[in-house]
Structures are given as C-alpha cells and as structure tokens.
Image (cartoon, rainbow, N blue to C red):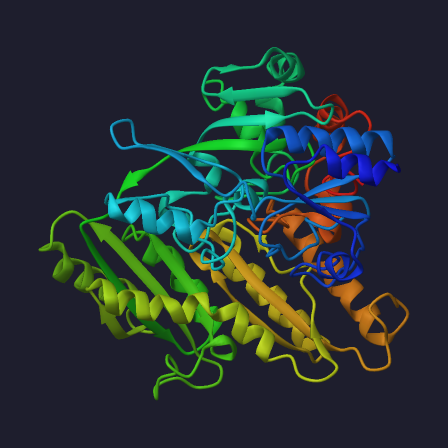
Length: 496
C-alpha cells in the first residue's frame, strides 16, 4: 500500500488526486496557475492534523482554500490544498447575550449574514465577494469592504481563534490569553512593539505583511496576529467574532462628479459628515442600471452611506452632504429604504465583474497595483500621479473602490498579444514593470500600503520589505520561522 492509499484510509473527509480536480484547484481568481499534488476536504480537526503529518513526511507544502476568490494566488500550492467549504462550514454558536458568533473557517459570509440578520445582528466587514467568500479567507486577508470606513476590517471583530500549528499541535488565542507556545513566540515583541508600530503605514486599512502592530493595541490581543497571515502561520479550526446590532435607519446618496480628481478633492469634506461608506465608481465599471444621463465618460459616482438611530436625521444629513459637495458635486439619487439601498449597492459590488468585462481579446488587466492605499491627505496628489502614468503610457484603465479610506482598486489594461503569461520581455511587460515600480515608490513616499485588504499573495510578497524596513521585516521572518520552521504552510506568501 502506498502513502496515498494509507492517507485515504485514515481520512474521514475526502481526498483526490484526479487530474480534473487538480486542474480546478490549480487556479483561483488570480492570473497564476499552480497544480497541486493532492486536494483534501477535511471533515474535522483530526483530518487537518493527518493532512499536515502527511505533507511533512512527504515534503509537500499545504495551502488552505475557501472560495478561491483571492486575487493574488494566496490559495495555490504545488503540494496539498485543504478545501474547508465542503465539510468544515458550520456555524457553531450564536450567543446573542454576549454578542458573539463562532464558526468554522469554511462558512460562507453570505450564509452567515442571513443567519445573523434573523437576530437583527451583523458582522460588519462586507467584501464584494460576500455571497461566496469564506470567513477563513476573510480573516486570512484581513478583509473589510465598502463599510470598512465606518466599521474597520475583520481584525477589529476577531475575538477568539482555535488553531492547528504546522506540526499538528493545537493552540488558541483570545483577548489577554493564548496557548503557551504562542505566548512564547509573541513575548519578544513586547519590548519593541511601539518601535515596530511606528514603522507601519499611515493608513486606515492595511493587510501588508504581518499585523504585529495590532497585538498590543492597547491590551494584549494575540488573536490579531492571524488576521492577514494568509495561512502561513497556522490553520484555523474555529473562529469567534464580535457582532453588532443592525442599524435602525440608513441613507445612501449617489453623488456625481465630472471626474475622479474632483471626487478626490471633495472626499475629505464628505468625511467630515461622518458617513460609514464612501465608495468611488468610475464610469468604466458602472453597469447599465446605474449609468445616468448626467454622466459623461470621464464622470464618476460616489456612494455615500450613513447609519443612524433616529429617522429625523435623514433630512439633516441630506442638507449637510449637499453643502459639503457644493459646487462641483451633485446628489443624483438617494435611497432610504433597504430594498432601494441594496439595489444601488448591487451596482457597486458588481464593479469587479464590470471591470473584467471591459477586458476584450488580448487585452488584460493586471492586478499587482490594484489594492494600494494612502492617507486622505495624500489622496488627490496620488491620483494625479497615477493618472499621469496611465496617460504617459497611453493606457486604458479601470478605477473604483474605497475612496473614503484612500484605498483605490485600479488596474491598467495592457495588450498581451503574442505574449504568454510568463514572458517578461515584451514592451507591454516592461510598461507594467515600470508602472509598478513607480506607483509603489510613490506609495512608499506617502507611507501608504501596497495591500489594503486583498492580501499579498504571490504577486506582492516580493515588495513587502520595501513597505517597511529591515527592522520590521526581521520580525516578520522571525514570526514565520517560529510558527513554521519547516516552511510547510503556504510558502512563498508573506516571506519569499
């Protein structure tokens, strides 16, 4: 009996090495392709440990996978893929009294949203892929979404994690306490925490590298080290989150500007009205349901939303917003009931699909610079620079995203005619390299981040060191080696 057959006998879930399964799991939502040796569907913690032991004995890497919606190849591996969506997809506990929910990593965010809504509760982070992305993946990327402006990222709500170390050992972490191994790993960070934090990007959202700045902020929160870790430190068995009451009243306003730069100029004034979301939608990524007669092909919309507890604030908010966008912004639509609001938000969440549709034939969008963020003070200047580069190289592009956080999702569109994905010798590839270098250099000057919420993955990992410095990066390396000395978990992500 060979090792694969032995593994199958000891496994409660499913395992496959069939070519069509391996082919399916060789891709995610990125442009990368890596064929795994095996694809495993663990049914429980014991299966995860069995998978790790098998991988260790056979010199194979391990990558965890949810819905495969990551854009940078986070869930790809040439070893074992652990898919948690088939079996480890349960909501384990919903505690209304204490305001928490416990889940397995394979739970789909949209499914959780529906269950929480029945209790008038919600978990605020809401990425555009909420209907199919998984909770484990959201934590691994430290996802946020449109309402990250008002509510922050997943990291803010992570309350407890049960983990499995690469050697199969079990661990846990929650506010103020963790297992002895994790405590030992994190202890050297205590004396240098403030120094480490001082070198982090000056932005409101960040998923670049490891979030060492968040574990003593201000009290000990060891569970935060796993947010944005992309499955490189441990594997989730279960996770607990703090949940909130749904808002009683909401208002969503669509504000038209004649161009993106005007929208950037007014963003700071709009933020003074304390919205929970300010989202940019460029004309190129609007679907037909939202394109208004007042829009020209350089125009854009801002989605500005407010939550509040008293209905009489609606008219006040309308007047306040109107005064803060005068004279260049115009409120072209507004909604105050949940059905109308959701219909409008559907258009914003459909932006990525519309962006993909804009890529025809050999034209391809490149994602490496698609998740940058800068402080609001630098936003207008940064976008001027970004657009000047696109104009210099005569490139079409898409631009949309979380402008209230200074986080724009932008992609240049290049003609890939007669070039394979692996070639870096064409004129188009040199243009991409030049743009990437120049954009990232500008981001570093602004103390921004190259990864606000979508993860580093394969594509951005080589640039992480430049976001920080040798001092911070030495602790990233220390962390990875302490958790995973054999480099078993998702190698090549976070640490090259």
